[in-house]
Structures are given as C-alpha cells and as structure tokens.
Length: 400
View 1 (cartoon, rainbow, N blue to C red):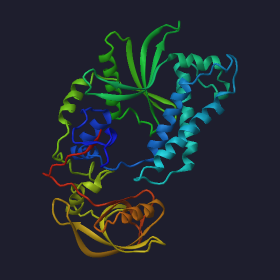
View 2: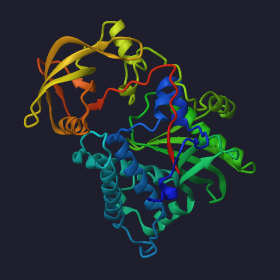
View 3: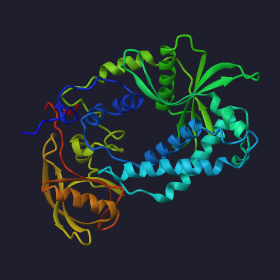
View 4: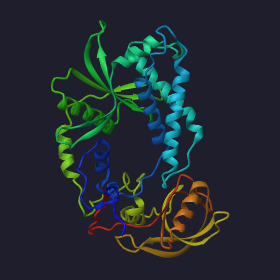
C-alpha cells in the first residue's frame, strides 16, 4: 500500500480568507464570478498579464541588482543590462504561460512593447529623483545607485495584522527633500495597461488607497505616505487621493467569506455581456443571452454546442447549437447546424478536450461569427460545458 505524503494529502479545510483589491473588484462586478474564481477551476493565462509581470519583475531586478562593478561616472551600461534582465523574465513568463493548459497563443512580437514599458518605468524612476529627459544610455552608476537607495521595498506583500486584507506592493520609495532628507514614503504601482483618461479608474484609485492604508495601519509612526499609479506605456504618474478605505474593505471581507453554496449572480451587460473567465461553469450568462435574444449574435459570440462532425487534420467542424433547457444550464440541442473551423491554439484546445473522452456539450468563448463559417482561433476558450447550478453545495478540495 502506497503511503500518501503530506504534499499529496487532500483536505476540505479552507485556507484562511484574505481579501485583495482584485478579489474585491471581482465581487462587486458579480458575486458569482468571485465565487467561481475561488473554486479551483482552470485559470486562463493572458498575454497582457504575462507581459506586465515580466516588466514588473525586471524593474524590481534592476533596483535590487548589485552594480558595484559599474563606476560612478560610467554610462552606457544600463540599456544592455536592462534588456538582458527583461529577457530572462520574459522567458520565465513564456514558460509559465505555455505550461498553462487554458491559454491563448504566445505573441513574441509583444517583446517590443515589453521593452517600451520597461523604459517607461525607468523614466519614472529617474523623475522620482528629479532627473528628466535623460537618455538611458547616459545614466551613470552613481545616478542609478542613488535611485536604488531610495527603494525601501520592491514586490512586497502587504497584509493587515489580523491577516484579513492584503495586497502586493510593487515599489515603496523614499520621498526626499532638496537636502536629501527623508520626508515621506511613496507607494508606486506599476501599470502596463491603458493610461487613464482624466483620472484614475475608481477601482484602481481604491486599490492604491488600500495599499496606503494597510501600510499606515502596520506602521503607526510612518511619515507622510502618498500613492501613485505609474503607467509605463507613456511614463505618466497618477495620484490616488481620498479617505481611508479600510472600513469598507473589512465590510467587503465579511461579505466575501467563502460559502459552499454558489453566491448570487449580478445578471446584466456589465457582467454576463462582458469578459468573464468563468462562463463555462455559470448558467446565468447563457440564460440571460437567450432571454434577451442576443444568443449567437454579434461579431464575437459565446456559445454552448455539440460537436457533430470534426476533421482533426484540417480543424473543420460541424456544430449543433444548443439553448438552455432550464435555469441550471442543461443544454438542449436546437437542431441548428453551423459550420466552423478550429485553428492554432483553438484547435489544440479542442483536441485536448476530446482526448479526455468528453462527449457532451462544449463551451466556446469569443468565437468569430461574422462569416458563414465560424472561426475558433487562439484567443477562444474551448472547454467542457459544466455549469454549477444554484442551490447545490460545492466543497473545494485543498492540497496540503
């Protein structure tokens, strides 16, 4: 009889409940979306997220690396060094991405965007010490060490003393006056996404204030703390201002305590009609689409189908469209046939589903539907349709 190691033991004991800003945002969008995100379902890799992680990690490396071999007046060293550091992180993220079963296609041509975003982050670090419009090949060893000395913490975990609230801090920088004296702290969160228009989005503003407030709660004697979103695409800084969010955060923590029963959905355009990573397990978006007459409409569409014919060599297929038979998402064939073509990662994902022996309904996400033959490409989800109905308890297994 084989003994089970501690690492292999399975338990139903939940991990301690901790609320992050992203989980809070997800709950406010749709409690069912939040609940599904905590059920151990397959997570989807994304190119934008992987690019952002690589850039963030490379900037942190630049702040932490020992550059004692670079002389004070030496310049021209940073561009090549920064690119080497970024390349290491890029390849790490690529390996993680391609090892994730639920993924689109890795886009190597996004490398130039990663380089641009890293340079934007360096420009903002220079700005933090009052240096503007300096070409990066002119950065000296002395100047970069000056920046490094102001980095109090990089990629640190923030957590309240009771362990209920948390966040991940990109940069905690020292604020100094003209005399070089420490006068405050700056929480800087690197953002590789779209630059705000006019002001920070409400959820981003709250995220940054939550970081600030946890930091102040844990450090009652801290100096003045300010917080900014650093948008690396165009090297712009956006301040987050406002009252403490901790009272609201603790109220949200209470609301988001995990339950065995699925949480109620927020049904509508902002949740069911938008991008949700958990549609393959939720019957509500499907019933909403069917009820309002938008099922299988639009240039890009989600669908539940039966695979009636499939050529594994070419990716050509015939699909039978399904409609919801009840509120629990039981699939009812309509008799309506649709030609389709699976290609690239979309075809690989279908082949992987079929290799498991799955023969029932299949969820297809973001199908290109504007032509006579639907296209299921690398950006699409291809997953077994497995809706988790209301009123049925689900107990997630945790590995110790």
